Length: 179
Image (cartoon, rainbow, N blue to C red; front, side):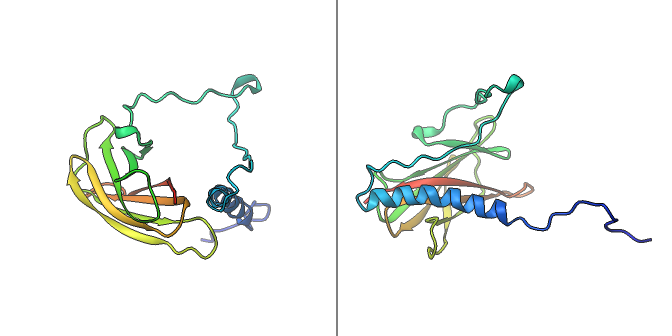
């Protein structure tokens, strides 16, 4: 038995456009942060965001979330079967070592304990290395690890949550670091 492509099948020959486009979008936010850090914060840069179109070509309203708000005002995201928020342990977030707190809850709002939580972080610009930190379980769904931010600007922080018998989940958050 022979399996595979047959004449006339469509195949993808390159995904570079999508990868390149995503990296340019991430770099745009990093550049805006860098402009502020070097005294060019009053310059205006605008970025376009894709818009979902509903019936009749009209933009759709964003879906309303029935989930409870994130604790302490931190943005919360639904990640698989979890609600996750990330916030610095001290405000304002500045260069140097900063405790990062990850709050993990299930979809009913109950704290998730006993998970292995870690995160990687980097500034989305050429030459920046990716750093990693393991978070300690502080109880009640709160995990804390340290990040060492080398400079001001937006940093991409990817949280990874592992639980026994569950699929590992990952999500990216943006942390804004000041001087």
